Length: 112
Image (tube, rainbow, N blue to C red):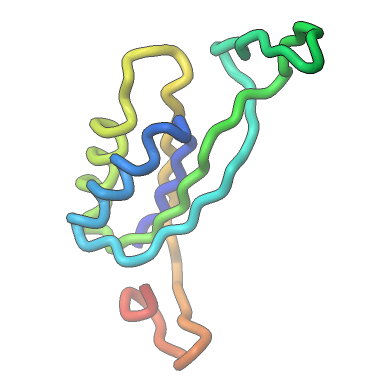
């Protein structure tokens, strides 16, 4: 099994979610995060005062899938998440040794 962790533009979440769902991904978790990189935050206004936020909002996806569909899931994220601009995000892939479903003690891919 593989754990795919992707940091994406929040605006691209729905397209990526739709794509990976079509591949049979039944579960994923996501969270709103902030980060920094080559992309600079846009200047914003607060009570008439201009300021530049230090961190940029992004969405972090965590998806655990069987080895066979991992390349397809990665391709979905790459194709649907790409705008061609700096700040499109990153994908990290990890090996998952074991998974457990707490409700009924299923293990391995059955727990996904």
